[in-house]
Amino acid sequence: MKDPRPRSLQWVLVRRLILLQAATFVAFIALLIAILTIAQPRLIIDNEAAIKHLSEAVARDDGGGLYVRDTEELRAFRDDFPSLWFVIRDGAGHIVRQGSVPPAYAAAGGVLMTNIGRATLRFDQGDRRPEAAFANVDTDAGRVQILASSIASRDENDGLEVEISVNVDTAKDANGNPDWLRVLPVLALLILGLLLPIILVMGVATLVTTPAVVRRSLAGLISTADQAGRIDIDNRAVQLETARVPTEIAPMVHAFNNALSRLDEGYDQRNRFLTDAAHELRTPIAILRTRAELLQEDPQSASLRKDIERLSHLAQQLLDRQVLEHGSGSRETVDLAALARTIAADFAPLAFEAGYELDFEARTTRPVPVLVQAQQIEQAVANLLRNAVEHGGNRGTITVLVDADGGIEIHDEGPGIPEAERDRVFEPFYRLRPRSSGAGLGLNLAREIARLHAGRVDILYGAWVGARIRLQLPVVGVAQTAAPSAASA
Image (cartoon, rainbow, N blue to C red):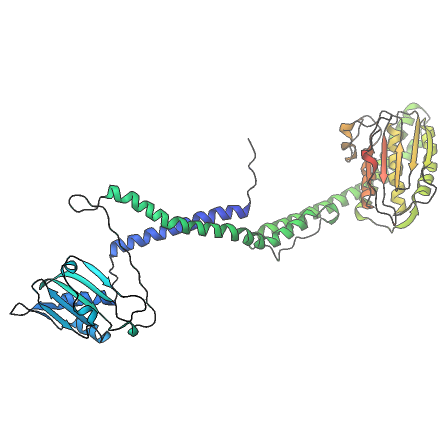
């Protein structure tokens, strides 16, 4: 099964916000249409309102003439618009007019006007004559023409004119009903044409703003993630900052901090246990060594003393491993070439006893100053030499080489280290040959000591015979050079 790819939070938000905005906008339009369909409101401007009140108030007298009754609605409208004027006429030529009718409207009428249902009459923008509404309406007095306006001049307006005009004319069947099969597709395209630009604008705005908002909102989380990436075994007690972390993610950061605290506590408990166990082992091992020395000389007693020595060495390495965790002791500047020469001289008897020749080679005549804890570097080099003695095949020459770049190399002429094993041999208690007498801690200790000194231990590879291991340390006052671990023959 293929693992799912991680998703970007900002693009998930962009997509969902666009869909949400589009759905919200469509739902709003649908709700508005439903409300308008149910309520069927009538939006009437002043002139249209005048025609409505007049059509309800017009009547005929006993002689068949027209007159306008003084209804309550018309009286209230006159109070609001005292400049109201109108002209009402019927097909028989009866006319009733009131108010100051502008001369331009006095003669309005004719056959054309008789066939018009409703119209708005206006002059050019610069003309101050008023706008009027015209309608042919059916009233209690029959069908009449009404021409009316609530003002006598455009100077009477409030300085702002807003006009909204919507005309909808649908296809109809033979009975005069809307032909929905023809109307609905056009109506759908019309609605889509109105909504799509708005949705696109909202989507583009979301696409532009959301990534910036997300990056700004998660800036504190990115800083906390960088801090978490710098946590290692040497600063495992660090607690991640939560001040700038979003509230929704703060519980996860707190849980991570609690996990770090528990891991640190468990790590310290393990170290204390190993240290106490190593200390407790030293006493019975010393007793065993003393008693073994009292035994008669024979192969079995010699083998027993060798096993006791190996056990003692393991206990000492465990103690050394725990001491490294605390990094105790002061550092001093020493000459690495002189230090390596001393270590090689001290180790010579052990190498000769195991059947090797020991050679020391310095590729520089100048001092190689390094800032180190000398005892720990001696221990690291001794572990590398002991590893060469253990796995060098008890033949050939073991070479200790020092160069001006701050490197110490240990060469042997044994079977070497297979390439597939070059990472595993640095693991604690891992032994390349299970039946060897080593404990599997020497290379691990050497690498940890180098790491504490900002250095490294590498296994060199090439066409030579045997293993070559390099301890690289930074030289005082010189930028650290790359270790030649990748140099081939």
